[in-house]
Structures are given as structure tokens and as C-alpha cells.
Image (cartoon, rainbow, N blue to C red; front, side, top):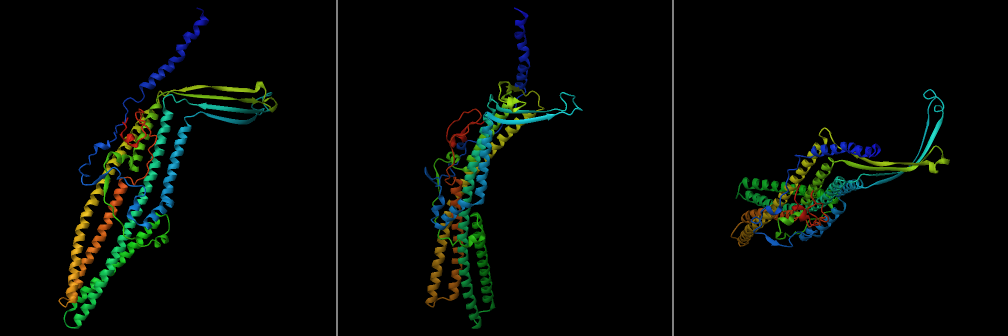
Length: 507
């Protein structure tokens, strides 16, 4: 074999030896010993059967999207619809969604080849003091027309992982925008219930004012007749002043709640003045789905968004790991270049440049390892937030359900007490009309009746608020986007169910 024939074969190992050594170094120094520690909770492991034992269970007990219509108040329905159409907070949430979608689009674009065209003219004249003739003192120009092509093949899946991480963040932002809508509607419903209670408290205060005035007038008559002393008058004056304070307090609360509702609508305080007194609101019997707690994952926007962020963080780990491996960049330029327009489109003006470029991470001062460690920490934080959201969601359901059950019992007891007080007041009135009792007896019997009316109004408002909290805790009936979930690192779950995402294994 000739020396000419052996040179390429002897030279080939010398050409690839540095590449092989770099690959070995990069692989050995990569991600060894780095891994996330977080583990997502299994919802079925959160036992809640005894807490929900006394609740009405149903396969269809998740709220409807318009759950607030169950209160039977047309004005409340109109207020929530108005808020959902024009609240600035919703505009901000929607802007965050568009921002996240744009970031996902940028990550997707980075995976694809690019092709660009350019036209350039460049001129140069060197002074003769720098370069003698024929170079110096002569102006030369070059016209260039070119097409440039760039592409970085995704050999290790890093580009795809970055795109799917950004996509997961975008989906989380979409679900969080739904959570903002749920929070807005529930806050309006709660404010409306509080407004109804404030009007009822004002009614009781006005009734107490009338009772105190009757006591004051009766006391003055008795003192004038020598049947009583000033103590009765002073007590009546105190009760009248206290009733005035309660009336003013109730009016201040009414004004404040109207302002709050107007702000939730995205309007000025004058809009609140147009909100009429709420009518009687119906409190529905509390019920929870029989599939809790596992199916809660697919109905709570905050839990779903937290899981999407776990998925995004897992793909962030993939992208960070891909940084440890060599990258290949393909580029090419094809065009025409000439010193004059007349020669630009001739065969001799052809310009061709291109080829692959390989870059290898060998020693980087620990940048890649720290970057991967940061992605691992991001994942652990996302898992912790998800676990916290899941546990908190189940606690909110239990709290709302238990509160509703307790308040139903308290309302029943308070209603019994009120019925007894009503009968006592009727008996005192009957005795007074028959000449067997005094007007003082009637007014004294009226006081516990008014106190129980105020107590009942507060308990009814709390019961309505517990129903709102339960609807909110169960997800508010919002249609959570559950299609095409982002699978975890190992691509082990392609299910289109959010429930499957929530149970997917973590890296």
C-alpha cells in the first residue's frame, strides 16, 4: 500500500480523537449526582371519607359554570355577568396568558430552521498614507445578494423540552386566568350576601329605635305620673342612642359594600348607588361529588395550573440536561457578490459558504451543573406548590361542607328560639290588650325577638357564604382545559385527562 493511500486512514483517528475525548469528558462531567427530590402527592392517598360521611354524595355534585344562579336573584346574575365582561383584573390575566403563549411561540420557533434574504452594498477607500497604490487612494465597492440558512438539529431533545416547558407555562397561565374569573364571581356573590345582611341589620336597628322611642315616651309618662323615676328614662335614652349608632353603622356598611361591588365590576362608586337592595337569597343543601378527592384535580383551576407548572419544570430539567451534550449547527449562505452591478448576475459572481459546526461543553466552571441544579430546585418548588394546592383544596372543601352543616344546625336552633320569642311577645301583647299586663311587658318581650332577628340574619349570611365557598372549593364549574397534556420527562403519560397528569410519575 502506498504512502499516499495510508495517510487518510492514519489521519482519521487523529481527527476524531479530540471529539471522542470531549464526548467522554462531557458525559462524565455532566449531571451525575443531580436529581430533583420532589414527589407529587397522590390525591387518593388524602383520606377524606369520614369528613364527608354525612354529606350528600352525588356523581353530578360539581357546580355548574353559572353556579350563582342557584341563589335565585336576577340582580346578582346581572352583576356577575357584567363583571366577567369588564373587570380590569381579567384583562391583566388575559394579558399574562398572551404573554405566556408568545413565549411558547418563541420556544417553538427556536426548534425550526430559518431562512433569510439580504442585500448589501459595502464600499472602502484606504488612504495612501496607510497603503500605497494600487490599493491606497482608490475606492472599491461590493454588492452582495444572499440567502442564509441556519438550523440546529435537536439531537438530544433540548429544543423540544424548552418548547414544552414554555407550553406548560402557557397552559398554566390559561388555567390561572380561569381561576381569576372564579375568584371574581365568588367575591361578588359574597359581597352581595354581605349587602343583604347589612340591609337586614339596618331593619333590626330601625325596629330597635322605634322600641326605644316607645320606651322613652312611656317612661316620661310614668315619671310625670309619679309611677317611676328617672332610671327608666335614662335607660330608654341609652337604648335610643345605641340604636342610632347601629343604624349609622349599617348604612356605612351598605355604602362600603356598594363601593366594593362597583370596584369588582370595574366601575366607579356611582355604579354602586344603582345596586338595589338584594331580595331573599336561597341557600342550597350542601353536596359533594362521590369521586372526591381524586376528581377534584380536574376541577380546581389552581390545582390544575400548579400541575401544569410541575410539567413545565420537568421539561426544564430535560432542557438543562441536553446542555451537557454537543450541539450541531448547520449554516449556509448562497448568493451573488460583485464589485459592479454589471457583473453581479454572472456565473463568476456566485458566493457559496456553509457547513456544520460542532460545539462541546468540556470545562465551564460549573455553569451547566449549577443550571441543572437550579432546574431541579424549580421542579421541587413546583411540586411543593402543587402538593400544597391539593391539600389546601381538599381542606377548603371540608371546611365549607362542615361550616354549611354546622350553620344549618345553628339556624334551626336559632329559628326555634325566635319562634319562642315571637310567641312570648304575642302573649305579652294579648295580656296588654286584655288589661292583664303593661306596655312595658310588651316592649321588654320585643327586645329578645329583635336580637334573634339580627342573629338569624347573620347566620343566614354565613350559611350563604359557606355555599359560595363550597362552590368555589369544588372549582366553580369552570371548563378547565385538559387536552393534550404535557407528559413528564420519560413521556410515560399521553392521556388527555388532567387526572392522568396529576397522577403521572415525577422524574
